[in-house]
Image (cartoon, rainbow, N blue to C red; front, side, top):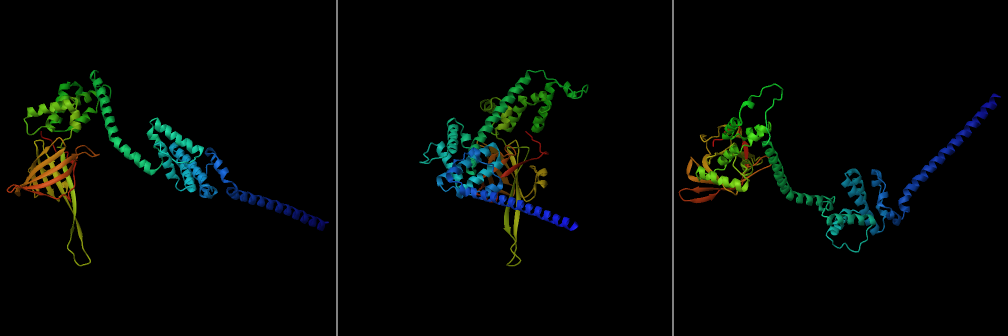
Length: 460
């Protein structure tokens, strides 16, 4: 009985194993059939059916689908072109929506179908905007509607949208157009902001402004001073040219802002900074009064800010370099020395200036750079700035008095500040005995840049 039971158990287990093997083989064969169907779908699908698929039903492809995409399925060139343009339109749309990852997938897919689809797209859109004939080409419905949208935007005056073609060349063209209008827009915006600020400040004048302590019951001693006394204190700042402290004072509160905008303070600054040196003070002040009335709407502060002027609260420095061959120890070794030298230029309100050519660094020169400075390469001269922002300097060297050196610069502004750059125009020397002019080369010379020096006080 035991032998019969064991043999029956072996038969049952063998039958179960056979059934499991059959099921396993069936599943494997089904998986193989599915893979074969997937790989055969592109070759089975006809080009006409592929092109008939609307763009809205395009599947969101993953990275593997894009890499495995087969453009050879589009045998007809016209169908291939239309399909590439459809996908490219979808890429442009995705990029405009800000979905850059999806846009990249569609761009890659379109370029895989037609490597020149970006040029075709730009060409057809530009021709549509300029009403040029595209030719006897038939586009798909999606691309035709896309072109029509661009045409409508262009006709309605929305040219910025019509030119939003996502190509590097078109972006550069927009940047060039924007750079030309950027300065104009910034100037107009600046004037609008100034008008609003002026209106706001005018409204403060009608208000009863008082100083209140930040901490209750804490006394404010400056509140006891009348406005006339505070303005008299501010005049002391103006006399030494400390405009920074004057502006910071105006940032404290509304009342101090109004006091810092006192016209008499800025009128004094303009009369000193823009004085006509060849005229008497009264005649110079009359001419400046006409200028501020005609050009700056009687706003002395605006005149001081906008009108070009030479900075007197620091020194202009030019850092220059040149290469000089050194002494060679042998034929295989030729040293080259980099020589650095500096030019210093400081201006004074009475029309005089001092110049210095040296190899000493600014940290060792600036503090001692005064008219009493004694060194080789030190010169004194006079300066004049005309209405065209051309600065002319005439200087003499105490060691060679028979020569007069004439320097011409173009006064410019940079992103760091206004009136802080002197660009070379010409540099000449004149022999006082023979009146012979000699032009000095500017090959190694660099433009001057302004550096403010806190220890300098302006003497009007």
